[in-house]
Length: 256
Image (cartoon, rainbow, N blue to C red; front, side, top):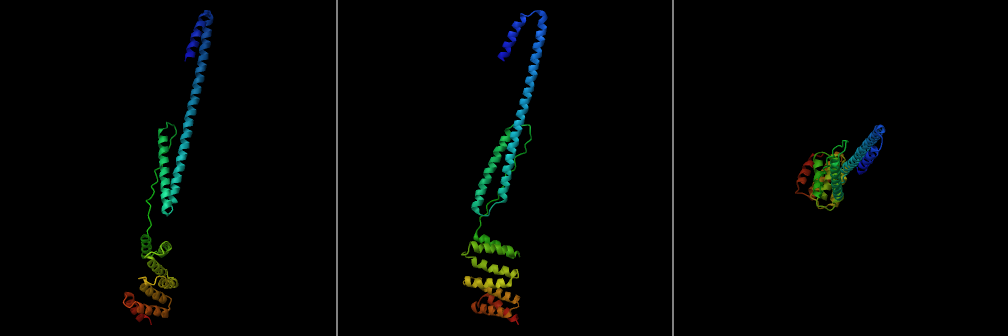
């Protein structure tokens, strides 16, 4: 600004020394020169302004793309949650960290004065609470599925139970219900083998009388009356006071 004023002052001094007939020509030339410079400056300002807007737009788009990539990562993490508790806890901490990053980027976008329209930040993903598996819960799931007639699903649950908790107090019960599942699936030979294995592996199981009665019924389904009679007589001899022994006697009367 000082340079401009100094230039005007010097130009005024020089202008005083110039004859009147030339003064108009010099002024006109000077005005045209200043006008041309002002137009040039105006064009440069517009270019700078456009570059600034474009730069802000590019930065906003870059941040938006980054936000979208984080959103995608959150959704992918949720759809791939593992049933193992330790993995779930680790993934939950990761999701919380990503949500924090999204919130910070959203604040940054909100504070920018840009001409481009930026969509709102995605709604944070709600991670379902971690379900802690217990032996009793897994056993109960299998039993519920069996009662609902979902035999294949029940078989998976009882098999998982025995694999994870082979020494649990409910292990013999789970082993018995697998035999019941086989019977429900009409896999009578498998049911017979399962009930026989129950007596060998868990000789003190309270489910043995029930398993023997159901084994006899499986023999009958296979039209093996002799096999059914043998099991029913063993049941009556070994557990004479049981409810199953009473039912065995009634069933023996019906077998011809």
